[in-house]
Image (tube, rainbow, N blue to C red; front, side, top):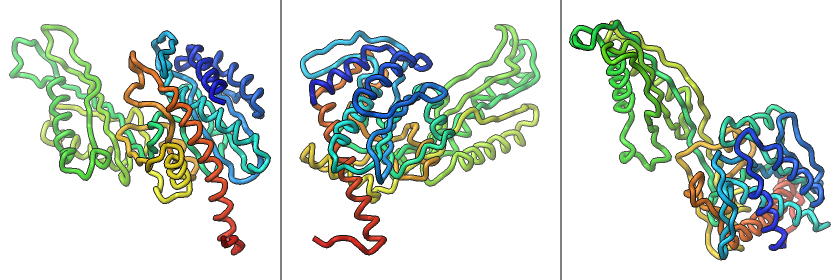
Length: 379
């Protein structure tokens, strides 16, 4: 299995597939998954969806085949494969495809596995949003991103991207005391929004803190003109149990108070993008099955991670109303870097973890159904 698994990953990494240009890798996946026994189709926007096995539960393994732009030459060095997408996230995707195919070979295995490889995760999340629109459904789901072979990501913060526009009267830059400077006013609003948030170091952990980062500033027209319009873009991260709407309303209150104190400044605020936070119940059968599988393969307990970023798990988890975690081999610190690579032995361990999880999760699901019906066999 190991040679075939490494060859699959190498083939995927040999196809350059930045967001929006996934057609070649999608066509390769369709043919390869058919060879492995999947029933495969491409949906209307190019997602590749393969099904294998039959029965209950239905388990969704969802990965993405796009990468950020920037080709890296494919090369193998000892126990490492270097290439764009090695960890983010063709390593996890190849591991999921391989694990699902191997588990389904066992005639005793009775469950349905859906492996979805989506487009544009790195850009617009268009692929996973289309899955939701098409009514994707499963009892459990794993999103394939590099958590590290011994770690499970059970939570991501939400995000809220707002644009604050300031407009003022203008005049000559030689008389700045006579006019309000729209750029300066924008920065004042930014400072007040940032200052309204409790410091990260006073929170239980960074995961549970609302944070703000100024990401883009524009304004001004000429060296001799006082800026009369500015745009400030602010990225806010939203922890559970808060919602993006609550964080936005708090920012709006700060802006409204500023407007009262500065009647000569016209301020508008708009939401450019938002996603709600998501955290799975760590006592769910999915977390239990994956934790047990990691212990079996790695010989040590799994670490549960809550990340301060935002991922497609947020969108998929809330839409499906089913337990979902993020798991996959690879070091996420290598995402998008010039040194992106995956350790082959960890990739192979990741396949084993996926396989064990599919088996354990199926057994847990069946036992759960027996408990509800009162027919659980006592050993």
